[in-house]
Length: 211
Image (cartoon, rainbow, N blue to C red; front, side, top):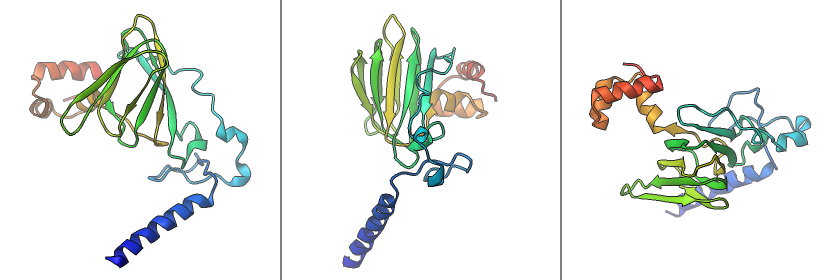
């Protein structure tokens, strides 16, 4: 028992010591991304520009289906974040825009409302309890890692929010796209969702799925 505890403590000490060796690890985007992030850029090639990013000033084009856009500042866009376990994104919601039910398997999220009004919430995994709030400018809301959550523009004007994540690459899986934007046979989707085949085929048609 003592040996096991000592062994675990030793591993933690070694890991924390290695993390403290480098002040930063700016991602070398010319090399493949791995489970622990990008390899470090050579220190001699690191500049102040690696630690600043202006990409959130201009949003990406709105998706016409959901009337929303998410502009990321993750490690692939902002290599200075590599290895730091944090990232951000900009969320733009047109009137009646929505970020559908989705999860971030790699990190928790905090949303800060800049302008407009947003109804946001998440579903717990233990008892499927729903927690949602109507947020106004200046409000923040947290979405725990891996839980299904959503954001809807609940106002009469465009809404803008900034989100932060506890991971440099939090990942994203949108439930609707996972079910209806692939080639999973309709009968399997029907069996697992209790939806009728006609509805499933309609949704597949809208989202680009087949079968």
